[in-house]
Amino acid sequence: MAYGHGGELVARALAAQGVNTLYTLCGGHVAPIYDGCLNHQISVIDFRHEQAAAHAADAHARLTRNIGVAVVTAGPGVTDAVTGVANAYQARSPMILIGGAAPLKTKGMGALQEMPQTPMFETFTKASFTIEDTARIPELMLQAFETALSGRPGPVFIELPFDVLFNAADVPDQLPRVNIAPLEPLPGTVARMFELLRAAKKPLLIAGTQVYWDEGDAALRELTEQTGIPVFTNGAGRGTLPMNHPNCFKDARGAAIKQADVVILLGTPLDFRLKYGQEGWNPASKIIQIENDSAELNHNRPADVAMCANARLVLEALCEGLQGIRYDDWLAQVRALEMEKRARMKDWMALDDVPVNHFRFAAEISTTIDEDTLIIGDGGDIVSACAKVIDLTQPGQWLDPGPLGCLGVGIPFAIAAKHLYPQKKVLVINGDGAFGLNGFEFDTAIRFDLPIVSIVGNDAAWG
Image 1 (cartoon, rainbow, N blue to C red):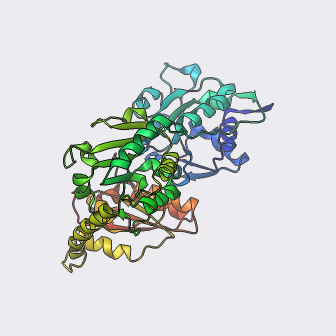
Image 2 (cartoon, rainbow, N blue to C red):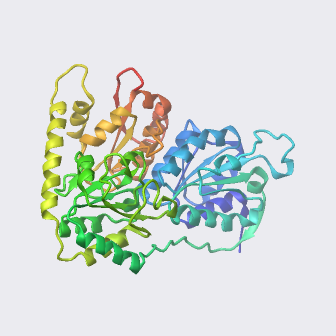
């Protein structure tokens, strides 16, 4: 057995899962956790605002495909982090937020910074709970890791009262490592998927965030090269097939969806980004939907084949089941559509107007980017334009807020990126409004010797 105070036990539980960095704004209610981090070689990056610490933990999770952890003090420290957690939830990012709390012995008596914290997180976390027994810290933190990483990844909030962190307890020496087995596709569902695709003339595949999390990039490339299925990417799926690959398309998505007879939705929801599967879609097209969250299946439009499964395993099954089948005529049509759309974009990119337009701005930035550049988009219109112009070549090369559209993620994301990958160049593309939200975190980057670059598209206005 091992013996330690609550902060030590938290650090041991984090280290057991491979956590090597904690993002925070230091506060007295959580001070014992920092002591534990010293004993377990966990780096502590201290921000100027708790929202930024939460955003950095979100970015850490996305870049490592694992848990990111933020720790904040009680009351206003917790409320400041709410937006960062909500953004992680919408982006399917498995972060853990640990929040301090007033001592249990004074609960309900009006202690400093006392407030009901766990209910705030219940609608946008996978779990939100309080640990009231120091001895149960390892067990309940293990459960938090399993919850965050299983199924649809997402955040967990853990409240740790002041006295629980200061009390001591005996706990097991060895803590198990979380290991989430990939969800196998069901054979019967796979057979129905093959039936649709073997009859298809104009299929396309939209690779979403789940393809990135399930490390499906190699299988995705093999599938499109083997069959000629045109690929569009969405969310964190961007970069899972290099955008300069001849079978990867961006600008022709709307035109291709209008004509497609089968659409494979691989880990991407039918939300506003895809017009809810309604406007501009071929009403006769068949939908194959693969998700890690059953709640997303048949959402906004019924799927002809729907399954919960690991994206990589589905792609590998498609490679096996579609041998000898190719869609070359359709691929050529999509390429022609892409060239037509891209020609219009190039006209905008070549304009010398003053002030510079968004697409020219993005085109100039793209000349500075190589495979060793991590790019963070933080803004509205400026980021949309850059996403259209800049070609990504690596999985995880591009980070943006995700479907919540939360501004202010840029500098916090960049700090986590440079900390994790010091050998890479880290570039933030900010709108002027977005930069104002967490731009002061440049102080954090300087204090921790994390050189990053921010380019601000400044039109001196919102929108």
